[in-house]
Image (cartoon, rainbow, N blue to C red):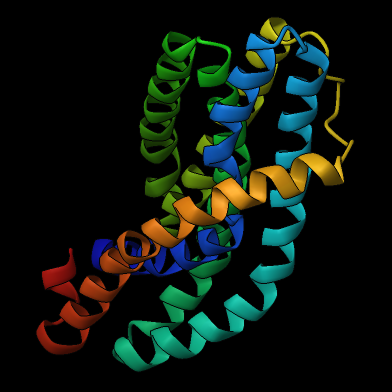
Length: 220
């Protein structure tokens, strides 16, 4: 079952291609505008990246869910597929929330508080372990999916609270979208995304081929 979760989560990482590298650009542009003594524009960078990724990934999730269902059906055995398809929504939800959280942790890097970012990620790992211990005995492998979603929500929430303390121009809810900043970040982010495509696809391809030719136990 651990092998099934591993291949579902790895396959779901394909949804991160729809980020277009925007999260990585947040570090550069937040730091840039703070160096120019323009915290309002730095806050606009965070909001624009957050709103863009939220919509881009939400649009990509539905067709990707259908496509990944076909992929999992091909690479997994008939008795493994039902559990995998039941886990897929939780894997995609966790990756979507996690991508939004990465915008905020990148913002913390941009305001030169990598220490806060590290503590938040440690908190996420510890909370994930606790959720696994609580939920897996009750819900089985689905509990691992629940734990992953809850971990992503904690990292997202705490990152937002901490970043707002460092960048007070941020509103309570990120909702503003700046087209000029989006174009600026997109040009930078696409270069990063092209370089990371091979890395993003390596893990799922490796696990799918292992599953197909060596069995799900080898993936675990």
